[in-house]
Image (cartoon, rainbow, N blue to C red; front, side):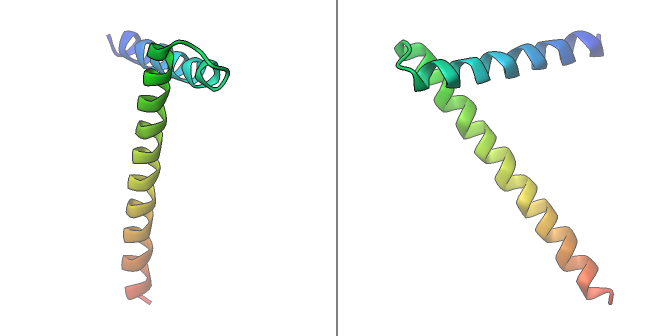
Length: 64
């Protein structure tokens, strides 16, 4: 079951990257929408990772 979920996530990831590539070259409107969603999700994950890392660094500096 977990393998099927992971496979589905990989397929979505590859499809999103393909839509970003295709949209950059003037693909159809739906590909541009999927590309926008993919890039937005990427930015959201990046910003949450930075916040999490910042929180870990600030707490570890207080222990010194």
